[in-house]
Image (cartoon, rainbow, N blue to C red; front, side, top):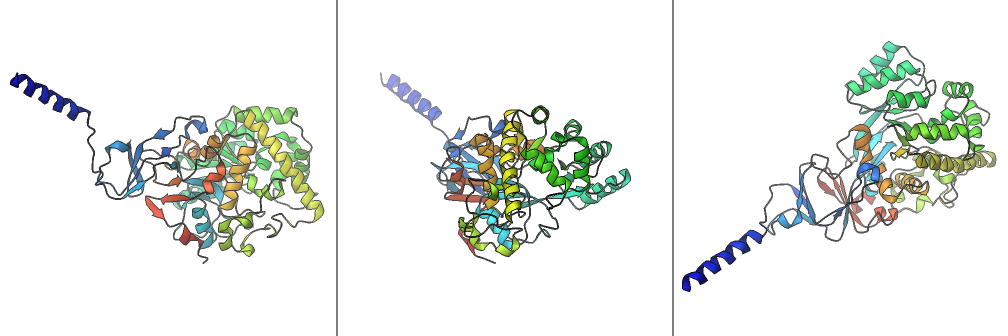
Length: 444
């Protein structure tokens, strides 16, 4: 009997030992444990969120994702995210940083990566901000007609200067767009089309990764003769210019227009992503909110913004005729993008800051707001600002995944329920290190 009792006791101890989870003291720099990791895969169409996981971070990279139950209670450098919601840091896919205040505004609004642009209106990109979102520079080819050899040499120069995105522009013909896209991919660059002498249908067939600006990539709707005139003179505020004659055409469309529907089907059947840059016309939309009322606006200088919003009304102070034209265009942009989305278009977020009153950090959230208004679910909107950048360009950020950059938002409230929760109380991890958000509000 004594022997049987000893044997029984031994079996119980063995079974108990087998059912006890062993904890591990991981040799990593930071661990985020608990919380709900929001699933943004498949362009935001997946919905199986991860719970009770721990994100292991080494240096600036996600080392692994493991069960939270394996974390030792003696583990150091742990952020307890129990009850919170975890997403990748946001991306502004078309923007400028002009100074430290701009960099701070992006970070304060949860933006950890930007695709950087420079232009006459936006000014020189400021590369010395600290802290700063990660910068992935965009460079152009073909704003004016050039030879094939000039296309190749321009892209080679951009690659030498470590550009990560090539903007393929109006002046290139179809064979040159194909050449530019091929050369860019050879150097590992993503490609954005802002086309003119090449149709967007041709750009899709060539395999350009993304198109930018609704008013640009809708040019296939216009007669070819007008499209060529716009390509030759793409920038003008003159209401009689080819660009504005084309804009007038857009404002006269309805949802049954054959050219619009055919173009929408071409977009939906392609692998090319769209960046509408709604923020350029956001202030002219009837539901727009005053951007100066955002807390982070206190560090932004009004004089740095191209055609800024009135601080009291939150609207543009354009001449009446010009304002009415932009308002009509904004209304039509919403209708057009709804048609594109309904036909299967895929999206990337980009604010086009700081043109036409768009503002660092603030306007990326305007962009997300309008993406939702054209029909995207909140999950699809979040994907457009995070994981879709990996899917479109192959960038190793925008996902909570082993081997990706450790750029992470820890949110107190669920952004799937309301996108405004992205601006609620949060913690920001940038390249594996936590950023003190309140310090960002100190004006430089």
